[in-house]
Structures are given as C-alpha cells and as structure tokens.
Image (cartoon, rainbow, N blue to C red; front, side):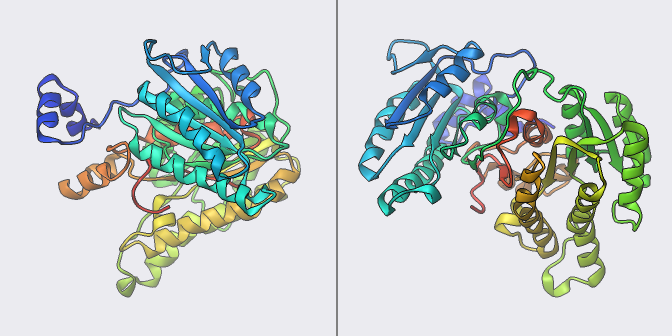
Length: 447
C-alpha cells in the first residue's frame, strides 16, 4: 500500500515538478527498525526558566548514545532533536526563553527531526500567570508541529513534580521512529513505579498479550509488533475470520482464539482460555471494531446497536470481567482501547461509530484511578486516516483528501498505530495512565 504521490514527489523528476508548482512534498517518515539508533543525529537540550528535568533528559539521551549539545552549532551536523525543559516557566515572560531555544534548533533539524517540550501541568500552577504560561506551551507546540517539514514532529509532555521517574520511557518513544505518525500531541504523566533494566528491543519479553480483531488490518499489525517486542500474542477474532486469524497467529508464533466478543459468554470463555493455557494476561488490546455508516435520520436500530455492542460495550464487559477475575491480570497490567479521530472530531454519517469511539475515551479516563491502584494502566489510541485495504477501496478523491489533511501530508500505516499501542504496553510506560494518544499525523480535524 504505497503512497503514489509521496513516492512521486520524492523522485528526481517529481521533486523538481512539485517545487516548481508549489505543491507539498510529503516526506518518507523515519519508522522504527530494531537495532537502529534512537536519533539519526545529536540533540540539543535547553531550558526555559529554572527547569528541573535537564539532567534527566541528558541522562536518557547519553544512556542510548545520543550526543547532547547545549546550543546549536551552525556549522555542525543536522540535529536529530531538540528537547526543551520548560518545567521552570513561571509566567509569560519566560516563554521568550522557549523561543530562544527552539527557533535556532528547529532550523537545524534533519529529516524526521523531533521537537519535544516538557512542562509542569497547568492544573498544578501556583498562580494564573503560571497556569497561563504553561498552557501557552500547548499552543506553541501544536503550532511548531504544523511548521515542521521533512517528516518532523513536535509533542508535549506535562510532568508533575513527583513524576520524574516516569519521564524516560515516553521521551524515548517520542524521539524514536515508533512515533513517526504521532504529532502535535499532549500527554500528561503521573507518578509511578517504573521498573528498570528493560530490554529495549524486546520490552514485552515473557508477557502474554490479547489482541482482539487480530485477523486483518490494524489488528494484525498490532499482533505482529507485540510479538516482535517479545510478547506471546493471543490473537482473537470472530469464527468467520478463522483462516486469516490462524495465518496471523502462525506467522508470529502466537495463539489463535476464535471468539465473538459480543456473545453473552465471551468474557468467561476468554478468561477460561487465559487461565488454562497461559496462567494469566499482561496486556489487553481492545482493537475489534466495525462500521455501519448511515446518516442519523436513516440509522436503523440494528446498525446502531451492532456498532455500540462491538466497539464499546464489549470493551466495557471484557475489561470489567478481567478486573473481577482474581489473579488473572498480571502485576503492572496494561489495557489499551482503540478509539478514533471520529470519536474526537465526529464524522458525517458515523454517529454510531463516533459515539462508540468517544465512549472508549470516557471509559479509559474513568477507569484510570482503579488501574493505578493496582499498579496497572489503561489508555486509548485514536487513529486518524490509516492506509488499509478498506481505505484503498474509497473513491480516489476522498482517499487523497483524507491522506493529506494533516501536518505530515500523508496517511498513516497500520504499524504506526501498532507501535503506539506497543509503547503504551511497555513496563516503562507505567506513568502514562488515562491518556488518549492520537495517531493521526496532527490531523486538521478535531482537537
């Protein structure tokens, strides 16, 4: 599923033509490859105000062999990233320091460069001026993300005073190729016990992961990435998809489990399988979903009910059953629900689908405190326009518009969703809880 326009625009003749015509030139994104360096070049680490994370950020980079610079070398090599510690911002006047750090560094970013800003949450501010300055950073980061070129991304981490130990894992994710299609996002960390000594290339080694809707598309990609990262994957899908499901499970050395997740006994059947075959479960990815599109005025009960049952009610029922099943969820368990850009922005003809996907967001936010009490997390990803076999069947014009209306000027790939889910499943993501991460290339639709 190649992007014909991106490939043409980056060809010899194509790049000249699109430049002459003033057309956009989508970049070939830097995606994760096992064994590849975290960044293709050095990183600048700067501060705005009396930041408290400068040493932590420097240590994270040095531990993985990334050269750290305190300032831009105009004659040096292109930068892989610029990181700004803005935890010391106390008022609007401190924002000038953010400009002073970011502006020259952004000019020196290489292809697929990264901008990452870390700040204290506005909700923890001591004054309106401090809250205003912290919130201003969100507008700054989202705008920078829209200005970057050559596949660059910009994201923001809010770090409470007691959450410094939660920083390294998210920092590595946002700088790496795993986050290629995650742009203009804001994630708030929490204090957590983050285990050390994780295998960077197999962070899920020894874990059991359930992935629903795993027979095809995004679900199959999630299963592959989770297996690549070391997990034994229990691939779940409906009996009608049994052959495709078996092929995916065999490919990754996982287990195929045919199950209609809307059936009355679905939760107990899954729990029984997990107890008998695996002794428990560490990661659950609620990926299964369907669409039954119609304008609301033409929406019949069957279309409405089926979408809500698969996309939302099943996630609620399975998660509650897993929580209630004594000893089943492993210590440090991870649950990830797949939402959608439609659940944030809405979409014409998809009232049922958008309602179900917005419901997933409400679910993870409401359950986050319960999961935190168990040392576990629950989060959601919200994909934007992802290039799949389904989108390939769209009318050409609709497909092209959907692909281009984002800061990266291209559609995402199933692996982009899978990489974000795999990161949220890692032990080092312990401080990410109740969050919604859009995998949309900073789509112009929605927040």
